[in-house]
Amino acid sequence: MSEITLRKKKNADAQAAFRARRANYIATLEETVTSLEAVVVQLQDSCREARAEASELRQENHYSV
Image (cartoon, rainbow, N blue to C red; front, side):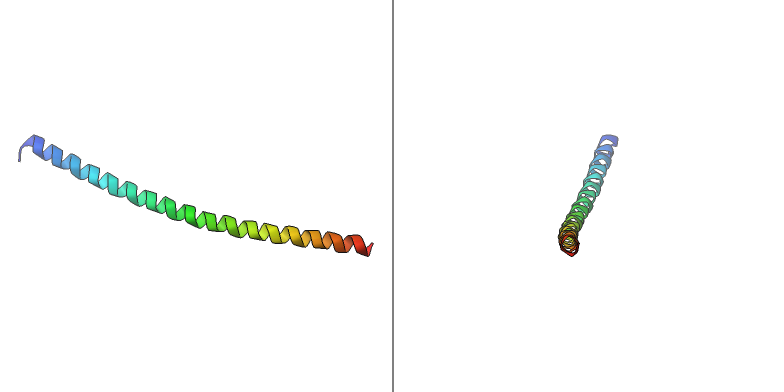
């Protein structure tokens, strides 16, 4: 193998490895985004429930005075 051919093969191998690492990194980021979106939904539900409970307690407190 000539030096140029060897260099081209090394470059192609390095590019393929980089693309694989990048694809893996992107897949990991997408999983993280999906997970965090689910957490956001859960927190929004909890917040909504807490606000409703606080409102009910204010109403009860207002009427008991």
